[in-house]
Image 1 (cartoon, rainbow, N blue to C red):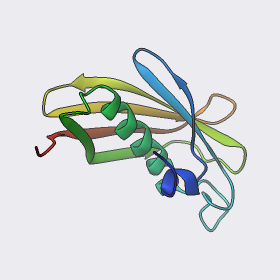
Image 2: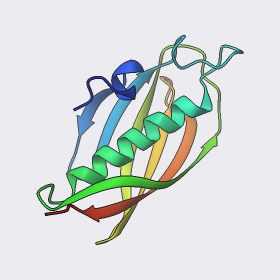
Image 3: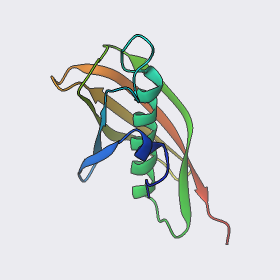
Image 4: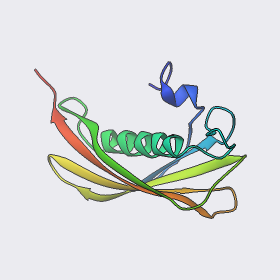
Length: 127
C-alpha cells in the first residue's frame, strides 16, 4: 500500500497497532530536515496525516467507504536533529461522515516534538 509514495520516500515505518491506536516511526535525516538541519515541520505533518489517514481507513468498511484528510493542524513543540521520531494516533471522534484523530509525535527520549489533529472525511465509494 505504501510503495511508490511519500511514505516510502520518507521511510515511514508502521511499528505497532492496537485496538484503539496505531504507531509509526520516521527518520530524522537529510530527507526530513529543513535547511538548518532540524526536522522539517512539514515532515511531521506528513507523518501525522499518514497515521490519521491509515487509522481512519482501518475503522470503516472498505468495501463501501474510504477516508481522506480534510483538515490538519500541527503545533511544533520541540526540535529534532537526528534519530527517529515516533507517532501515535488515537481517535477523538468516529462519526459516519467525519472522524477526528489526535497524533502525538515524540523524539527518542519520549519528549513531545509535535501534536497534531486531523479531521477525516468518510466518503462512500461509487458503485
